[in-house]
Length: 388
DNA sequence: ACGCGCGTGAGAC
DNA sequence: TCATGTCTCACGCGCGT
Ligand SMILES: Nc1ncnc2c1ncn2[C@H]1C[C@H](O)[C@@H](COP(=O)(O)OP(=O)(O)OP(=O)(O)O)O1
Ligand SMILES: [Mg+2]
Image (cartoon, rainbow, N blue to C red; front, side):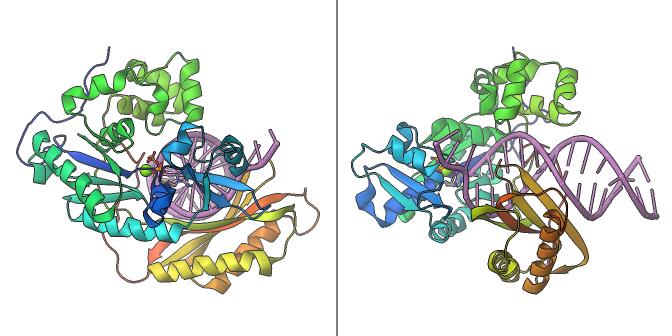
């Protein structure tokens, strides 16, 4: 019962008519865990859990990712480490490895650099994921796109030793969903005339941007599949999700997405730590200063300065509270970040009186960047990452 | 009406 | 039965212009 699938554009072939793009999405398989296998091949065949230890107790923390052997048993991103330990307690040789983000970042950069050369335009979405616009070099031909995609996949395996999954489609949204449907070690093309069939029977929650909260609301309104969402009255959706998000969801359900593949630049940096014990007051020099230092160094290394400095407090109930302050000038100074963050913490925890805010985790954020040196074509603000 | 600053919430990785 | 860390975007509100 779906209707159309793309939106403007009729033309075929030739240059870059608005929606004859071909977009490739590449996503490395169980990335952090696969990186660990790469430097320690004896791990292969065993369950691997990449852990973010918070330092609260020796085992407290969460799982960053797990390889597919562990995943089959129920270990996945975000669950408590102890829960993963319980799941794997009878598995011989299960490996719990502390996250080594720098190492993964290094491998990622090497691969991303080689990918960038293979695209008309390139967008790195995360440490293990990127979009390549390959419209021109495939001449808008999916046969050519298939050849290019398979070349890339094998090149990464041969040159870098990593398995990845590639999805190809008429836009970022579809290419990403194609990749999601094919992992691990997969390759999938969804052509424009296949988009509707591809999407229609998937649960709405599989749509990028529809998380647990939105899915629940949709389900309560009888919307179970992406196909349901695609034909649900637009005004009702606007009522439920607002006049922008409602229609947006509907367009996404139709596989429509005009958002260009373009380089991204960071807009904020933050650092959050978990306190050894919950606290409503703490030693700024011990807790806040090192955070300010890290952020200052990062700003200086990347050549950004920020006008907005904020703090983040996560309560024992895991609610997030934030306070922020915008300066009339941009800064990267450690002292300044430290001093403003401290002020905001004082304020938030009520220097005197006030109800007592209790923190489980605290953090600092810098945002509102101005570039120190040059600036490249940063552009507009817009709706979601995936649609016009 | 618009842009900005601020706080919150949702989502992705 | 414990719940990381980092980032992006949307929304709603108040405010000044
Ligand atoms: N909730 C999280 N907390 C911390 N780190 C995360 C989280 N989710 C993902 N990551 C990190 C670890 C992942 O290896 C990496 C890439 O994420 P993602 O592509 O979603 O999973 P993955 O690469 O491990 O598995 P796969 O892509 O095969 O499903 O980002
Ligand atoms: Mg991945």
